Image (cartoon, rainbow, N blue to C red):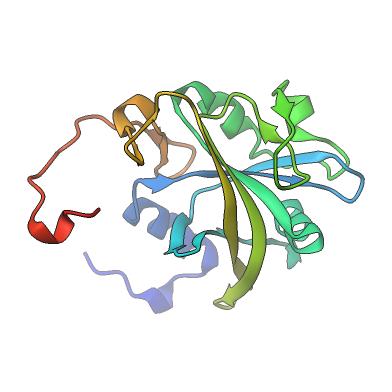
Length: 203
Protein backbone atom coordinates (compact mmCIF):
# COMPACT_ATOMS: atom_id res chain seq x y z
CA UNK A 1 0.00 0.00 0.00
CA UNK A 2 1.27 3.45 -0.90
CA UNK A 3 -0.23 6.72 0.28
CA UNK A 4 0.76 9.94 -1.43
CA UNK A 5 1.14 12.82 1.01
CA UNK A 6 -0.33 15.08 -1.67
CA UNK A 7 -3.59 13.14 -1.42
CA UNK A 8 -3.98 13.99 2.29
CA UNK A 9 -5.47 17.04 3.92
CA UNK A 10 -4.66 18.13 7.45
CA UNK A 11 -7.27 15.88 9.08
CA UNK A 12 -6.41 12.73 7.13
CA UNK A 13 -2.67 13.27 7.56
CA UNK A 14 -3.19 13.71 11.29
CA UNK A 15 -5.16 10.47 11.49
CA UNK A 16 -2.40 8.63 9.66
CA UNK A 17 0.53 10.17 11.52
CA UNK A 18 -0.95 9.51 14.96
CA UNK A 19 -1.04 5.82 14.09
CA UNK A 20 2.50 5.85 12.74
CA UNK A 21 4.28 7.77 15.51
CA UNK A 22 3.41 5.59 18.51
CA UNK A 23 3.51 5.45 21.42
CA UNK A 24 3.79 9.14 22.21
CA UNK A 25 4.47 10.54 25.70
CA UNK A 26 1.80 12.84 27.06
CA UNK A 27 2.42 16.34 28.40
CA UNK A 28 -0.46 17.18 30.72
CA UNK A 29 -0.07 20.94 30.82
CA UNK A 30 -1.40 23.27 33.50
CA UNK A 31 -1.61 27.02 32.87
CA UNK A 32 -3.33 30.01 34.42
CA UNK A 33 -5.93 32.02 32.52
CA UNK A 34 -6.09 35.81 32.67
CA UNK A 35 -8.79 35.36 35.32
CA UNK A 36 -6.56 33.08 37.40
CA UNK A 37 -8.31 29.79 36.55
CA UNK A 38 -6.26 26.60 36.26
CA UNK A 39 -6.45 25.36 32.68
CA UNK A 40 -5.48 21.76 32.07
CA UNK A 41 -5.01 19.97 28.74
CA UNK A 42 -3.06 16.97 27.39
CA UNK A 43 -0.70 17.10 24.41
CA UNK A 44 0.85 13.99 22.88
CA UNK A 45 3.44 15.56 20.56
CA UNK A 46 5.84 15.99 23.48
CA UNK A 47 9.59 15.57 23.93
CA UNK A 48 12.67 17.10 25.52
CA UNK A 49 14.76 19.35 23.29
CA UNK A 50 17.76 20.26 25.44
CA UNK A 51 19.62 18.94 28.48
CA UNK A 52 21.64 22.09 29.19
CA UNK A 53 19.53 23.83 30.23
CA UNK A 54 16.77 21.24 30.51
CA UNK A 55 14.04 22.18 28.03
CA UNK A 56 10.89 20.41 26.89
CA UNK A 57 8.52 21.09 24.02
CA UNK A 58 5.07 20.12 22.82
CA UNK A 59 3.00 20.85 19.75
CA UNK A 60 -0.24 22.83 20.11
CA UNK A 61 -2.57 23.06 17.15
CA UNK A 62 -4.98 25.88 16.44
CA UNK A 63 -8.75 25.66 16.72
CA UNK A 64 -10.50 27.59 13.96
CA UNK A 65 -7.27 29.46 13.31
CA UNK A 66 -7.09 30.63 16.93
CA UNK A 67 -4.70 29.52 19.67
CA UNK A 68 -6.16 27.14 22.22
CA UNK A 69 -6.34 28.23 25.87
CA UNK A 70 -3.09 26.49 26.83
CA UNK A 71 -0.95 28.11 24.13
CA UNK A 72 -2.51 31.51 24.73
CA UNK A 73 -2.03 31.33 28.49
CA UNK A 74 1.60 30.27 28.14
CA UNK A 75 2.47 33.07 25.77
CA UNK A 76 0.63 35.65 27.88
CA UNK A 77 1.96 34.59 31.29
CA UNK A 78 5.26 32.99 30.31
CA UNK A 79 5.03 29.99 32.64
CA UNK A 80 3.33 26.62 33.03
CA UNK A 81 3.64 23.15 34.54
CA UNK A 82 4.01 19.92 32.56
CA UNK A 83 2.85 16.72 34.29
CA UNK A 84 3.67 13.13 33.41
CA UNK A 85 0.61 10.88 33.25
CA UNK A 86 0.68 7.49 34.95
CA UNK A 87 -1.93 4.73 34.81
CA UNK A 88 -3.92 6.17 37.73
CA UNK A 89 -4.50 9.45 35.88
CA UNK A 90 -5.71 8.19 32.49
CA UNK A 91 -9.40 8.96 33.04
CA UNK A 92 -9.10 12.57 34.23
CA UNK A 93 -6.37 13.25 31.66
CA UNK A 94 -8.62 12.00 28.87
CA UNK A 95 -11.60 13.98 30.16
CA UNK A 96 -9.53 17.16 30.34
CA UNK A 97 -9.14 16.99 26.55
CA UNK A 98 -12.81 17.93 26.14
CA UNK A 99 -13.54 21.42 24.81
CA UNK A 100 -14.26 23.24 28.07
CA UNK A 101 -15.21 26.93 27.95
CA UNK A 102 -12.29 29.23 28.74
CA UNK A 103 -14.04 30.40 31.94
CA UNK A 104 -14.09 26.86 33.35
CA UNK A 105 -11.17 25.33 35.22
CA UNK A 106 -10.64 21.74 34.10
CA UNK A 107 -8.86 21.02 37.38
CA UNK A 108 -11.91 22.12 39.37
CA UNK A 109 -14.42 20.50 37.02
CA UNK A 110 -12.63 17.16 37.33
CA UNK A 111 -12.06 17.43 41.07
CA UNK A 112 -8.28 17.36 40.78
CA UNK A 113 -6.35 18.63 43.79
CA UNK A 114 -3.63 21.21 43.16
CA UNK A 115 -0.88 22.71 45.25
CA UNK A 116 1.38 25.73 44.85
CA UNK A 117 4.45 25.43 42.68
CA UNK A 118 7.78 26.71 43.97
CA UNK A 119 9.10 28.80 41.07
CA UNK A 120 6.07 29.62 38.92
CA UNK A 121 2.64 30.99 39.77
CA UNK A 122 0.84 28.09 38.07
CA UNK A 123 -0.27 25.42 40.57
CA UNK A 124 0.68 21.80 39.99
CA UNK A 125 -1.43 18.65 40.29
CA UNK A 126 -0.96 16.96 43.65
CA UNK A 127 -1.53 13.48 42.23
CA UNK A 128 0.96 13.59 39.35
CA UNK A 129 4.09 11.45 39.78
CA UNK A 130 6.24 14.02 37.98
CA UNK A 131 5.70 17.75 37.47
CA UNK A 132 8.00 20.14 35.63
CA UNK A 133 7.82 23.83 36.46
CA UNK A 134 8.58 25.63 33.18
CA UNK A 135 9.15 29.13 31.88
CA UNK A 136 8.29 29.84 28.26
CA UNK A 137 11.22 30.15 25.87
CA UNK A 138 9.83 30.26 22.33
CA UNK A 139 7.12 29.14 19.91
CA UNK A 140 7.92 27.90 16.42
CA UNK A 141 5.19 27.56 13.79
CA UNK A 142 5.18 24.65 11.35
CA UNK A 143 3.18 23.74 8.29
CA UNK A 144 0.14 25.33 6.68
CA UNK A 145 -2.09 24.80 9.72
CA UNK A 146 -0.12 27.23 11.89
CA UNK A 147 0.37 24.73 14.71
CA UNK A 148 3.05 25.84 17.16
CA UNK A 149 5.80 23.93 18.92
CA UNK A 150 6.07 25.52 22.36
CA UNK A 151 9.40 25.21 24.14
CA UNK A 152 10.01 25.93 27.81
CA UNK A 153 12.93 25.72 30.20
CA UNK A 154 12.40 23.44 33.18
CA UNK A 155 13.19 25.35 36.37
CA UNK A 156 12.21 22.68 38.89
CA UNK A 157 11.50 18.93 38.75
CA UNK A 158 9.00 17.45 41.20
CA UNK A 159 9.46 13.66 41.36
CA UNK A 160 7.44 11.39 43.62
CA UNK A 161 9.55 9.83 46.36
CA UNK A 162 10.95 6.46 45.34
CA UNK A 163 10.80 7.04 41.58
CA UNK A 164 14.32 8.40 41.15
CA UNK A 165 17.54 6.56 42.02
CA UNK A 166 21.01 7.89 41.19
CA UNK A 167 19.44 10.57 39.03
CA UNK A 168 17.43 8.12 36.91
CA UNK A 169 13.68 7.56 36.86
CA UNK A 170 12.54 3.96 37.43
CA UNK A 171 10.18 3.61 34.49
CA UNK A 172 8.56 0.44 35.80
CA UNK A 173 7.60 2.20 39.03
CA UNK A 174 6.47 5.30 37.15
CA UNK A 175 4.07 3.29 34.95
CA UNK A 176 3.67 6.04 32.34
CA UNK A 177 0.90 6.06 29.76
CA UNK A 178 1.46 6.76 26.06
CA UNK A 179 -0.95 7.99 23.40
CA UNK A 180 -1.78 5.80 20.43
CA UNK A 181 -4.11 6.59 17.51
CA UNK A 182 -7.49 8.10 18.42
CA UNK A 183 -8.76 8.03 22.02
CA UNK A 184 -6.53 5.04 22.74
CA UNK A 185 -3.69 4.79 25.24
CA UNK A 186 -0.98 2.25 25.93
CA UNK A 187 0.91 1.12 29.00
CA UNK A 188 4.48 -0.13 29.08
CA UNK A 189 3.92 -3.85 28.62
CA UNK A 190 7.16 -5.79 28.38
CA UNK A 191 10.35 -3.78 28.81
CA UNK A 192 13.30 -4.80 26.64
CA UNK A 193 16.62 -4.04 28.30
CA UNK A 194 19.84 -4.23 26.32
CA UNK A 195 23.43 -4.30 27.47
CA UNK A 196 24.86 -0.79 27.44
CA UNK A 197 27.96 -0.22 25.34
CA UNK A 198 30.76 2.11 26.35
CA UNK A 199 29.10 4.97 24.47
CA UNK A 200 26.02 4.56 26.68
CA UNK A 201 27.98 4.59 29.91
CA UNK A 202 26.86 8.07 30.91
CA UNK A 203 23.24 7.83 29.74
